[in-house]
Image (tube, rainbow, N blue to C red; front, side, top):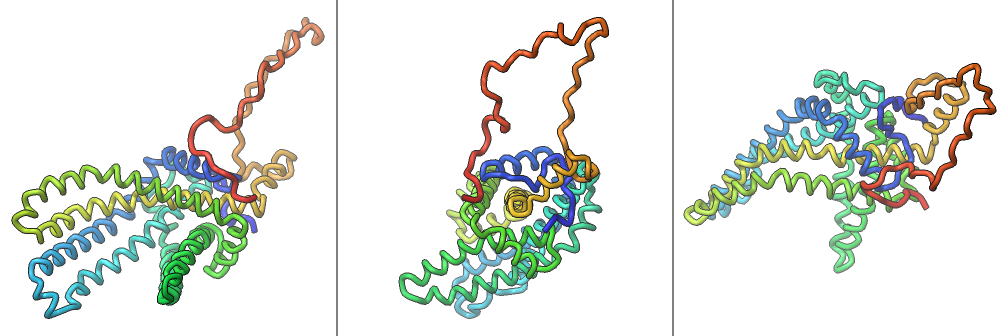
Length: 351
């Protein structure tokens, strides 16, 4: 089915891309829209991320107190499942929904050609209607994974079979989420769409998502190094005198680390939308059809971004006969490749 939204952005989401091109497009998109994207995205996500980080820090602090008094755990085994723990679960769920919805909202607005005009208020208006589907799909997927864990009780092969099922389901979950965020009106329609798109492309889809998460992990680790160094320096002497204080120190770095992590989630989320755009274009071919219609003069330039035409050569003077003009020199070598050198490389999505 055709997209519910056009694709007027400078970087198309509906385009044929291999795994490497998906990563290149993700990096180019984030780098080209970094200021606007981070300004509006962080404005929405930072309050929830800070609240979740504070809740996590308080929970670590309480765990430190339990660690210092082992008798407390024996007298109340459920002490760790307190109000702070409940708040941590709530903020984590809201944060996950908001980060996914905000990233999807920016992509939707970008595809409408609104890059450079997106504010935090506009992003919120687009994102607030997407949060509930994210929560719904996450809950359904979590229940499916939890109930499927029953097979793990089978000796030896049970845990391997369950792990294989979880890995197999990841591309279907990701493409279902992307389809619901960008195109489909219901979760059932999104799942049926994802099932058709991933069929025959599971390996490259999983590979692209895995690369995106690895890139996310590397970036977060590099950015978090100063926090971990400070934690180690402060904790060297503290742990020797009071080992329980390590939990409090870990809690102190959770709030800023939570904000950094939520910003880093943009990497796998944007890559997920590019993967979905490739799969949808490969099946529907709507972008190619639109291009052909525009070139044939049967459709307006709505949603079609063409490269700027090359400047035309000046016409020769009237006194110069056309036959006296020199012939254009022939190329000395093979044509230059379409893609610039460097960047990620990867195989195609379908065999």
